[in-house]
Amino acid sequence: MTVEPTPSLWDFAPQLAGADPADDLVAMGADLEPGTVLAAYRTGLFPMPLGSARDPMGWWSPVRRGVLVPDELVVSRSLRRSCRDFEIRVDTAFPEVLDACADPRRPHGWIDRRIKRAYLALHDLGWAHSVEAWRDGRLEGGLYGLALGGLFAGESMFHRARDASKAALVGLVGLLRDEHVEQRLIDVQWLTEHLASLGAREIDRGMYLARLPDLLSVPSPGGFTRAPRPGHE
Image: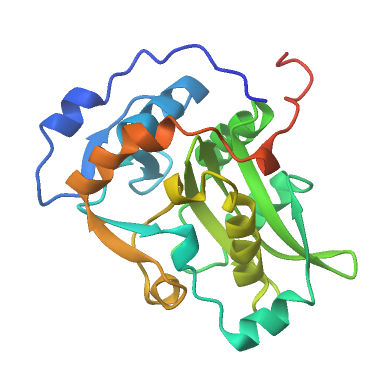
């Protein structure tokens, strides 16, 4: 169950329509209210800080978008064995996953206090979710993102044990394998060598934006159905 927040005051469509075809950055500023963040994703953008907390927020739509088709996930024999060591849970430790992904000791960290507040609010409303890899009662890895119909917009992942974040990704794909799996897509924003080894690939921005309305029209996976936090009924 999700709660639709107050509509945003911001409209990202004109900025996207006039975006530089060679630039991933589409807009700057706005706010991080739940309605604004959801409006951005539904338009094809996502927020990421430009630098310090004093800088305006950046809104991005990569010219070459990294995506993972669920049925194209590559699970090696060794990863399949590793997955047996972990228990996959959903939304049992969202704040802890977010904190681990935001650890300032991680290289290339970008998750600041503004982002954390925004996604905690979206979690409370039933939009943002964590997929977690547990072993012996310890959170060893996980990922978080937004479930928007047939789109899972992945934001970040972490691991404390080998293959724990990969096991969480395998768990996420398992959640997406329902009667609508062929209509589902995982957005990974930018393609990395690590994600490419797991089956992710790039599509151009126009292709992603053209597919987005159909993705948003698909029912969300049942595995992400959860009650909103008290106060959001």
